[in-house]
Image 1 (spheres, rainbow, N blue to C red):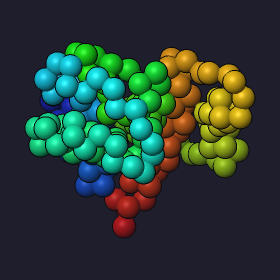
Image 2: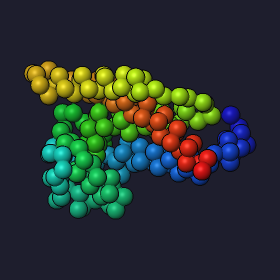
Image 3: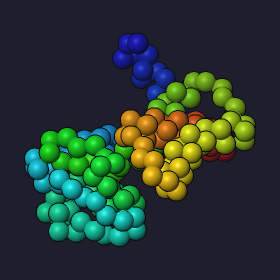
Image 4: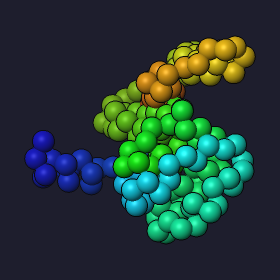
Length: 175
């Protein structure tokens, strides 16, 4: 696809579609680049609990962009080391399942661009079954999921949710 075609397609998008697209991909790229925007070995083990600011001492020493991403991750994710990916000797700001969900949101939204897709309640619920089974069985038994399985189940749930966000953006752009 030429740059002219990309610009033409961009110009056809409404303001809400553009806004959602930029936010979804911007946030996903910030999360994925998190381990590289802090010094090597700065965020090695962020294990904690959801809803707590467990890593204040580590996060306060980060640059402003990394500080925001890791702070949001610290408050909204358990960040267990064994359930997270690490690069550059730094743990990602969110666990593998959350990374899958955020990436799925961006991919699903992008996939739905230029397509007329209708979601039904059964399809939405079906997309949540893999993540629900994997997480619930892990919570209630000795079963321990893998990070690859966490990412895949997150991608499925996030992808369908991203498509739903595209439908919402289309609706907002029509008003």
